[in-house]
Amino acid sequence: MDSVLGGLIVITLLLIAVFTASQAYCNMQSSALSTWQETEARMLDRARTDISIDNTETQGGGGLLDVVVTNDGNTRLADYDRWDVIVSYTSSGSDAIVERASYGGASDVSWWVEGLYTDAETGSPEALEPTLFNPGEEMVIQVWLSPTVGLTTSNSVSVVTPNGIASTRVFTY
Image (cartoon, rainbow, N blue to C red; front, top):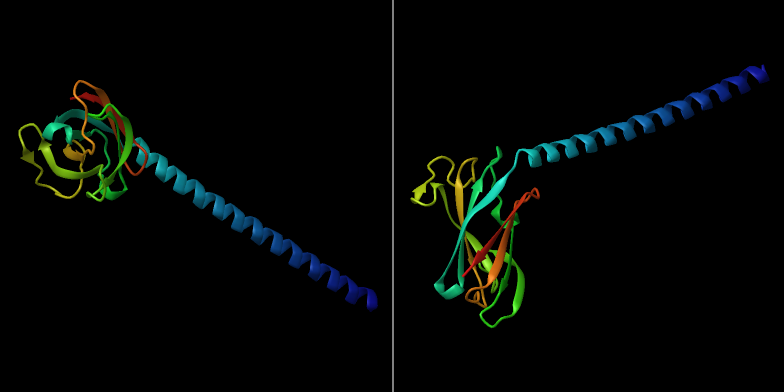
């Protein structure tokens, strides 16, 4: 009788150990699958996103830069406060400056969305979803630069979306 009771206790402990280990393994696999799906969704979003800088124009004595960005991908973009606009330029005082412009005008080098257009050159505004940067549309970004850009200097501006897609263009003033 003692050996049967001891055997039942051993079998019960073995079953508990096996079920605990298999539950931990299933939880680990579920977590790995979830992480894989998130990564796959992020990669798909990046694969469907593409932007290009089509034109830049320096105005206001070198203190204002207009940047025309085209959404060449298949993803609607927004969350402009999460975008990065990086300007590398030579100031009018011949200093080399590299700045990440802040969104909304909170610093010396800042940027904002001037408008969304179906054609920025003609000024034809977008009519559908006026706050979203839809595929095929053009967005005019205005960058305030202080100190101002120096005359006849080679400079560059980079625009980076929240999901990491970037475009860079060289400009002169």
